[in-house]
Structures are given as structure tokens and as C-alpha cells.
Amino acid sequence: DGGITQSPKYLFRKEGQNVTLSCEQNLNHDAMYWYRQDPGQGLRLIYYSQIVNDFQKGDIAEGYSVSREKKESFPLTVTSAQKNPTAFYLCASSRQLSPLHFGNGTRLTVT
Amino acid sequence: KNEVEQSPQNLTAQEGEFITINCSYSVGISALHWLQQHPGGGIVSLFMLSSGKKKHGRLIATINIQEKHSSLHITASHPRDSAVYICAVSNTGNQFYFGTGTSLTVIP
View 1: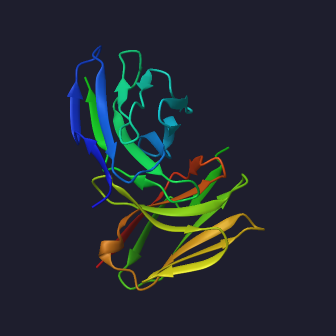
View 2 (view 1 turned 90 degrees about the vertical axis):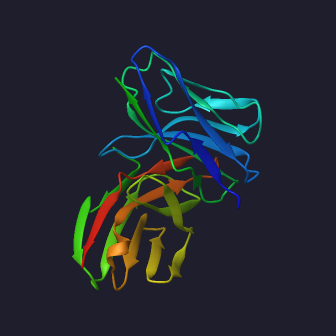
């Protein structure tokens, strides 16, 4: 079955450590997105990529980095520069003018 | 001001009730989306529409382009409908804007 796989589901890190969240899709979608979800707020865009080897910052990119070396993969690194990294992170993909497909999310807790 | 506003934020209904969730937007769009998020976090797309009305089972979505307004209706609500419903809009650049969601609880 086609879909988006995010791993791990839960992730715990110490403050000051970088951490990478995985996102893989087998839907052959060109566009991929990373969103952050906090209680009481809508999804906020961190980074997006419309094509391999190209990506753009979203509204809250500071403290995050991404790569898009393969069409299927769009990993997100949460760096130690992100001041408030504890959140629920969602990866999504889509074709042009089509619905978003979401992964099941990664809940990151930094202490 | 958010590009997408939803109401109500929270909604509690008795099983069997007819439910309406509203969404207004302030930007130009190519489509409007209704999404469902269950506890545990995964999000699924329920509808994508650019005009008129769509129906899937007990769910109906409507959009009024002139009014920049959409509604999601659930007929004969059931406890398994309990979830967060999110309205989103997209443009021709494949950018998405999201509402903050409506948390629905259906009581048996």
C-alpha cells in the first residue's frame, strides 16, 4: 500500500542534542512538507520541497534543517538552536492540486 | 489574522445529532480541504472541493466561493466520529493554510 512513513513515533532527547526525524513516501509525489503542531494552534509549515535537491523555508524554519536527496525521502533535523523543540511533527506529501497525504507523526520531547 | 478561521473550537454532541462545523478563509484558493485527526495524531483527508457540495457516507462538505465559506456536516453522528476536524485551503502554488481545528466529541 502506498503511503508516508514517519519514524520513530516517539522520540526523547536531551537539550542541546540534534535529532533527525525520518519521512519516507512511496506515493511518487513531488511535493513534501514538514509541519509542526502545538496544542491550540493550526499546523505550521517548517520546510517544504517541490522537487528533489530543492527546498524552501516555511513560516517557522529557524532551528530546523532538511534535505531532499531522493524523491522518496525528506528528513528533518531539529537542531539545538530550536528554542522550543518539544512538539508533534507531521510530514506530508502531495501532487499538484491534490489532497495532502500525512504520515502518522513523530512526538518529540526534549528535556 | 489567520488565513483560515474555524468555528466552533470545541463541540460536544449526543449520538444521532446533526453536526455542522464552519470554515471561513481570506485568501485566494484553488481548493478547500477537510481533514480528520484522531487521537494518536494521524491526519486523513476527508474532502477536497473547489465548488458546490460533496458527500461521502454521513459526511457532507459544501463551499460557497463568493462568501469564502465552507461547512462540514455530519448526519446521524456516532461516537466514532469523535476527532479533530481541520479546514485547510490550498493555492495553485501548492501552499496550504490550516485552521486551528474543531474538537468534536460525540457522547453515546
